[in-house]
Image (cartoon, rainbow, N blue to C red):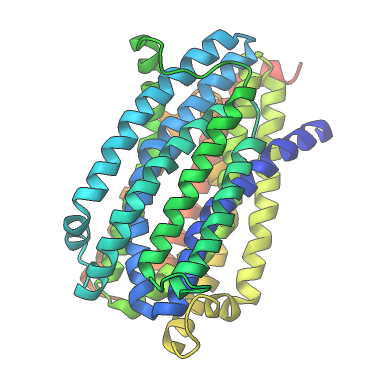
Length: 446
């Protein structure tokens, strides 16, 4: 088991770091915009980012990219690099088409999207500019996600980490220069944050593309479309993407309901979501690494090894996110205060309470994320989707409609509801995971 833990750490740490670095883009945009523009700036960036990342994650980040990782990993586990190459090339072709389509939607219909989301006039004007500029960066972000999926399938999580590191250095640097107008650069506020994010995403993609020469096979767009392989990718990507959609769309709908409570509640909620995102990125990192490790083991038909990877990933993710839970309980006021002007005392007070409630859900969230990744490594993306669909659409959404939308209860109710949802999802996933793996017991015990 110790050997497996070391391998999980060596593969997962770069993946965890990569997820954290990607989320830091949102964190630093929110932090600096909050210091420069207060509630309105935070709301504009928060709402626009929430909408864009929701659909990007559904289609690419947790959809097609995860499918590529799983199929490439299983092919490499079978020592079939030619098959892995085909899955990678076909997946990238399909992904490029989706990425360009999403770019056009965000660029052309930015105002319509935000208006439909119920954005106030000031938030709408700022958010429209932010979304339109960021749509260019989001295209390159989706392309980077596709390449990262290939790298992870080949057990390389260090190259995607390098790309994310470059992205953050550029994003943070230009955030400071363009939001506040430092060293002769224009003071652009929210627009500056958008330009910084876009520049970072472009450089990240270029780095990943350049490094692709070191993959065990060559990436190319010249090969003909193979509909059988496209079908295999879609068959795995659709349930995985729908699982992300079942979660992310409800999260987006929740954000829109919170918007109706006013900019105070929305800005406090966005700040807490941003802080919490630093915590659950390690969970996603361990989940993604478990897809590759379990997938390789299944390709080797080594079921005992797959079980050990699963248990090790669960242990490490729970420890890391449990640590963040303690931090959220001990220092909530200080963390929230980092993201807003000191004069915004009501936002800080409300955000502090929400963050303390959110601390309770960290470990259940870690277990849910990793078990979902493990099941995808086994080649089953339908079961995690069904469970996520039930807990989000059957429990979380109805409770939010009743308490937040209809009765306009305080934003603290939002966080109580999400804690209930994650706890139930954790319990259900554990039950079904044990049933799923019971058929492998005779191999595991050998």
